[in-house]
Amino acid sequence: MKELKIHFLNTIWSDAIILENNNHYGFVDTGSKFYYPMVEKHLNDLNIKELEFIVLTHFHNDHYGNIINIISNYNVKRLYLKHYYGLDGTTSSGTTSNDEYTENETKVYNEILELCKVKNVDVVYIDDFNEYNYDFDFFGIDIELYDCKNRLYELYSNPDSPNYGEKRFNENFNSIAVFIKVNDYNIFLGADVTCSSYELEDVKELSIKMIKTIYDKHDINHIDLYKSCHHGGTGTNTLPLCNLLKAKYAVITNTARWLDGYKTFEYLKEANNDVDILVTDHQKYIFTINENISYEKIIDESLFLLLNKD
Image 1 (cartoon, rainbow, N blue to C red):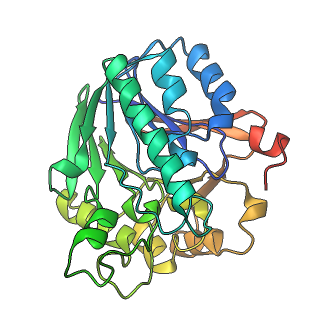
Image 2 (image 1 turned 90 degrees about the vertical axis):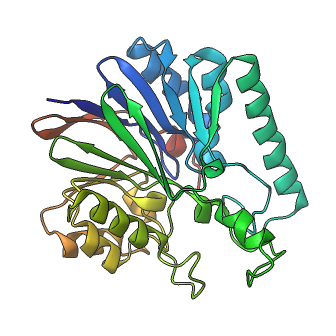
């Protein structure tokens, strides 16, 4: 019987998720930089010295923010990511991008890669494989990464693209997600994958296409544990997506008070009235998946709220 623990740290508008398998650990995103004291405390409380991997789902600072700190202070074996080309049409906060923004992001990206060389971290660019998904083994548990295409680069560089030479889309359209099947339980960590209604087929309803691909591959029809796409915010948890997921547990890395303008909770409940919706504003959650699925809630004040971030 396999067992996986998933630690959802108490971040808001940011993801820092730890996977644990028999005293081996890996990260899916690392949280915004100001969360590092909380991330470091959690790692040290678990006496973690070594990390098997970091998966960087896309190049936004609320996901890559602590990679440099973590690689500097812990033995990280491997980093999975896509190339970053500075083709953002909008920033991580949704404002219009400019040269200063992309130059700064490129600088940080290069700093991460240089540090990986110094610390002997194996860097795997998943967009080099020209495949839709990429799998790797985590001590007997298969970690599946989905949508490995570099969509921003393809749309920008392809002469047949309607957006050839245009910096129109942001890194959320480049986001990968993680699927894990543990025993009879299906886990989908949605990163910031979009469910855009754009007519352009290359970026339309990416999360729905992804879920359908996963269902076909594994002959399944629901997700037991769902980490909400894009922190429960706009353009993600549409009713068609929620109906497809039929999630039993939904973790939203946000605070409910900032989701009032969205129908995330309503749609998740409409799709499955028994769904257990968990937000990470004042608590972290540690899920254990083995013959059953359960979680522990740990109260822990959010640095985001303490700093009055809006």
